[in-house]
Structures are given as structure tokens and as C-alpha cells.
Amino acid sequence: MNTEYLKEQLANIMNFRDTYKTSSTEDKYLHNELTKVVRVIKSKIWNEEHDERNKSQLKTKVFDGVEIVIPEFMNGFGEEYHYKLIGGDLYVIPTKYKEDKDGSFHQWAYVYIKENENKHTHLTISILGKDEYGDRIFTEAEYFKKVESFFRYLSKSYGKNDRFPEKFRKQVETIIAEYNKLDGVNDFNPLKGGVVNSD
Image (cartoon, rainbow, N blue to C red; front, side, top):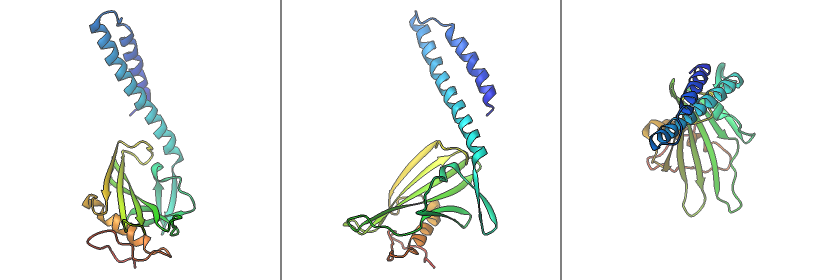
């Protein structure tokens, strides 16, 4: 949305709001409701301006000759992760297997899925094992309207192992298969029905 238009409307609403004195209960109620609207519009303007700045700074990477825009919410990973384009989805996968001090492991992998023009999904898979609870994953998805947005409009935690939506099965199985390629990982398989072969 045009932020200049929003700013004009915000000024009009604020002027209108300020014509109401808060002496009567009815006027006070209207003033408070308009103040809520002002806060929502200010937040919208701030988000739009933030997205516009991010859009101009988005980075791209080339995978097998294909240039891919790295979404704002897929930035900031260090050397212990690498990007990989698999089946049209952008994955961020650990570069090496790492155990905690007690011999267990807890690592993360991520995938960017463009579901449609206004629905960009950041899927997080927590990978855990070598403890009393055995191999397992926890899945969470954050939803964004734009690749340049850092602010999600929805977040859902799906829980353990097979408790994620079926539409994410391919991505979850791919992450597990990629994780199994790391040196030190021995047949990590938290899904009941098995996973795709890592070859």
C-alpha cells in the first residue's frame, strides 16, 4: 500500500480524533477507539517502510545457473549452515553434525516455500536425538506476505514427528535425507512411515 496515502489518512484521523473532548463517556469512548485505529495505521506504515528498505537490500544466490532471491527471513545464518536449492525450494541445512556435551544432539534446518504470491512460508525443523527420548523432530511454520518482510502474520508450532501438515511432507523428508548425509549421523529417522532415501 502507498505509505504516503496512509500518512495523509492518518493525519486526517488524528485531526478528527482530537476534535472530541474526553469529558463525556461517549466522546471518551470514540476518542479511545480512534486512538486504536491510529496505532494500527502507524504500525502498518512502519511495517511498509521497513519492507521497502529490506526490498532494496535483498540478496540473491545462484544455484545451478538459477538466480534465487534470498527472503529477508532466510538471512543471517553463519558458516555452520549452507543454502541448497532442492525441488524449487530453498533449504538452509547444517554443514556438519554436532553433539551437545551430554552426547545428544539438537540442530536446526530451514526451508523457504513459496505457497503463492502472498504466502511465503519459513519452515523450521528442530532435529533432536541420542538421548532418552530417541530421534525426533519438531516442526514450526511462520508465514509472511512478502519475501522482503521480516514480520510474520502467523506462526504455527505443529509438534513432534508426524504432526505437521501433509503439504510439508516432501520438505521434511528432504531435510531428514540431507541431515543423514552429514558425517556422524547414523540413520536418523524420526518419522513413523520412513523417509526418502538420502542418496
